[in-house]
Image (cartoon, rainbow, N blue to C red):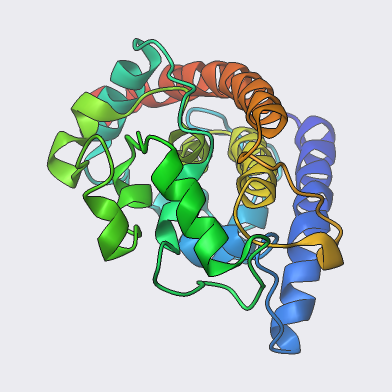
Length: 263
């Protein structure tokens, strides 16, 4: 790729990522935490500097490249498992009946996980959990359930059955596309990693707006899933995110499948 082609791509990627990482790094310098915007940087292991690093993906030779050689990074372990997970998830019908209750189950009669008040108080929050069916299919969401909420869930998802349970309507499965993307970096295009991050950050916003927390002071109006109107709004947004995630999952499969043979 000619330098006059890749240099603008690299600059555009870095500028896009800086808009997300600069506020996080500024807060970190002041030891401040934001329950919505900082989540992806704490829950996932990708550093802001690595998210910022641009790569054209495997098989592209860059003219006049004078930066870090990206191909020193090994192809990720368990790549075949990741591709299998993406393919199986893509082939399943999405389920949209969870209404974000995983966040409610995480604080069920156990105190909060963030320094933010509960909209309905502890008893009101517990009442919502007890009145709705818990149908979480995602292991990494379920493992944070409060102990008293775990037995209320229809399933008991584990790492061992992740390949059998993960489904494309799940907000956490779609947020995790960012995890699989950065684990494939730099062997896939940096723009795809950034696209997955962008989806994950918008999913996180819905996740927390639909949670039991009162985030109005931070500028996030609630999606009150304890009401029919709130559940309808949540389901509509969840379906839109699933459509976006379907396209990203297919792009990841196209990029990752050849790496299984070469890795």
